[in-house]
Amino acid sequence: MAVRKIIRMGHPTLRQVSRELEAREIGCDEVHRLVADMIDTLHDYGGIGLAAPQINEPVRLAIIEIAGGQTRYGDVDSLPLTVFVNPSIEVVQTTTAGYWEGCLSVPVLRGFVERPQHVKVTSKNLRGEEQNHELEGFLATIFQHEFDHLDGKLYIDHITDSTKLVFDEEYERYVLPVEEARLMSRDCPPTNS
Image 1 (cartoon, rainbow, N blue to C red):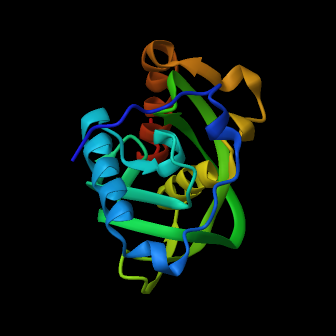
Image 2: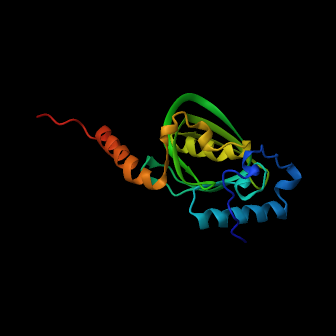
Image 3: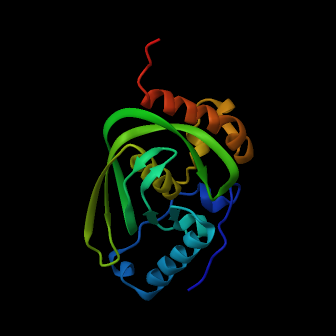
């Protein structure tokens, strides 16, 4: 299909609430072409998730694909490429954790966001069948981040400490080494001297 341009913060489509796809639209060729374009775009840009509004299509449609394995966020479960039509998200448990989030629509920046860490997602697939996912930890964060786009929100809207919004280069240079050291000390038992 086609790689589409990802719109960036400041474009009005990113700040509007997307409309739901009607049942008759879900299986149509136009929506299947849109999903194919989203997949090509996601792979070309190297992301793990993409919402339709990010390519200037204000409909409630998102895709997520996670390779899984060991990441800087710990061990993350994989998720094969999955399409979410008209998703809704419910917080199961309000316990929060924070991660440094980035976004293809907010390039070269990263911000620390705290979100609930146990959510349930209900959506439809491209055949109009209901699908349910219960997610915890970093996966819960990923889903909340992607589905925020469908409500006209960006991760920067959730940053509570503006000193924790940094450029990617500075994140790599100054923040990541501190984060890795913190994780390492948490995983290693104290030594007795």
